[in-house]
Image 1 (cartoon, rainbow, N blue to C red):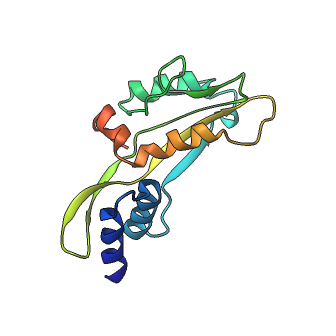
Image 2: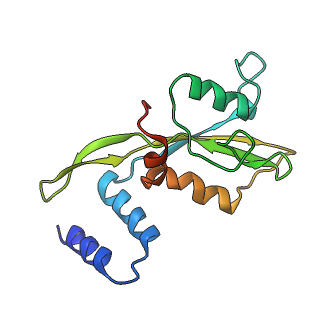
Length: 149
């Protein structure tokens, strides 16, 4: 309970670091559960119904998944083949959580990250990481609406 009280106090402070608070709130709410899983499109194989990230994005949207908006060609992809990494993500699902104070609220839970690597690139792009983790902040969910994941 002392941790929750300190978190609430920090959130009220002028100039609070919202990114750190979001991470702290996630950890206090969900513990050590995963916040996302990653699917590497390059490993789907020749018999997969899709052969690229943009095709997978289209298939998921057709099946009712909401994707986070991004500046890529399809409106959902960050990065590109030229940057050696393209990625997208679903909007985080939400679930009800009852906090220690007795309040029950819908909170973001997990999301699916989709990546396609090019030319053997093994790293990540910093700007992509921020966009992907916005999935659980509620910013993307308010833009994309509800989904079933």
